[in-house]
Amino acid sequence: MNIKITGKDLKATEAIKEYVEKKLERIQKYFDEDFDVNVTIRTEKNIQIAEIHVITRANTYRAVTEHKDLYASIDKDIDILEGQIRKAKTKRDRMNKEESIRVKELNFGEEEKPVENEILKTIYYDIKPIAPEDAKLKLEDMGNSFLTFINVDTGKVNVIFKLKDGKNYGLVEPEA
Image (cartoon, rainbow, N blue to C red; front, top):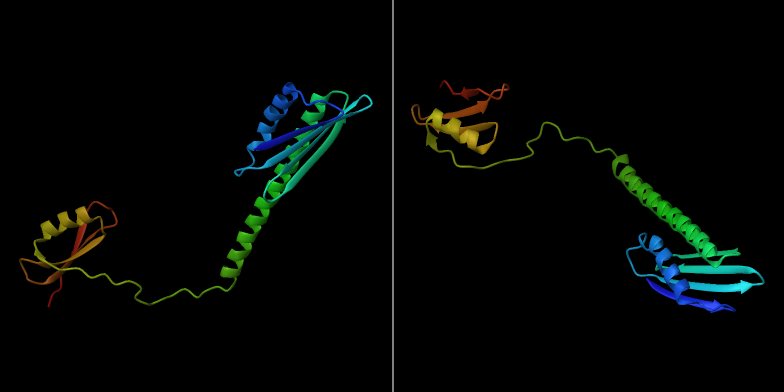
């Protein structure tokens, strides 16, 4: 945050500069990038006027207030700027959200027909001759719901699978 304080018909004292910097910390939380702040303070008759410009890469925010007390005028400017920044941020966020919803609607507006009755995935692995008890242990280690193996006792392809109860197993063994 780059702050420039200018006084017209009024000297910008160190106390005023510190006060402005302290109050501008409220605004700094809204921005990720660096931004410039121009503060102009002046007096007209018995009225103190504070004018604050916040210049970012995307927007410029401005607040001008007058009060008998310069510090009260600066406070009011900070409140006004914070409201403007919050409003712009909310509007930008809403626009981004609506834009993403529009993109989704465009993509899903043309409903794709779900693929049915097709083989979508093929997995290749070696089938090794093992005993059904060893196949059960291997299935537990793998975390899959089934395992295809060659039964050492019969020499035929078998499938072992977990039953719906999650505790027991089933074995598919061809007859021929």
